[in-house]
Image 1 (tube, rainbow, N blue to C red):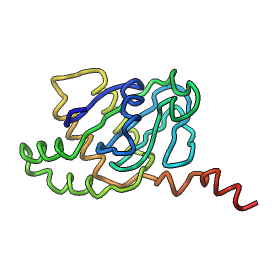
Image 2 (tube, rainbow, N blue to C red):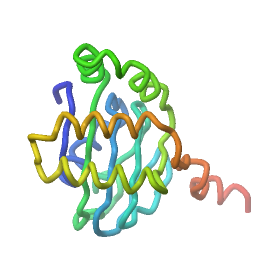
Image 3 (cartoon, rainbow, N blue to C red):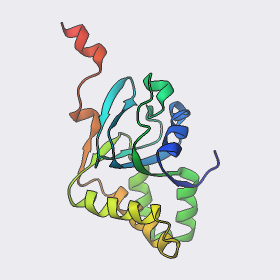
Amino acid sequence: MSTGYIIGNSEVLCKLSYNQRNNKFWTTVYVREGRGIYLLEDSLRPLNEGDLIIFPPKVAFSFASEDLGDEYNINLDVVVFCFDADWLNSVLAVFPTVAGMILKIREMKNPSAVTGPKWIKLTSLLNQIDACESAHLPVTIISILELLSDRQDEIGIIDVCQPPLSDLTMRK
């Protein structure tokens, strides 16, 4: 897959899942409709309508049925926005004033779920880019990056979810 940014749906999300072990993308997933599951590191996690999740590079996750063992997630309506470090460098070259924002995005190490006012703003922007409003696309993308650089209204996924199944069985 080439460098840059990708805007897509559940099909794109599953295709990206094949290479997540060597992931170089920041991936934002917004579930507009449906329910399912995904694999984060070595544990299955629920996926619900309204979820908005940010996965930084090098976090092993998958939405692909090959990794989940069944035909999960085929009825999800999602908006996916992915970008890599090379694309961030290109944005920085064109808009040097966003340097602080890009630095904060690059510092992101753990997956998180978005909540609160940030969720409202980010889901609106993701719906806009999915609707292909190309006249406003650069402004929308910069607005998304600005929101992603702000760590407010984010909850670490690993902190709030159940421990992996292997941990539960070891405690008994």
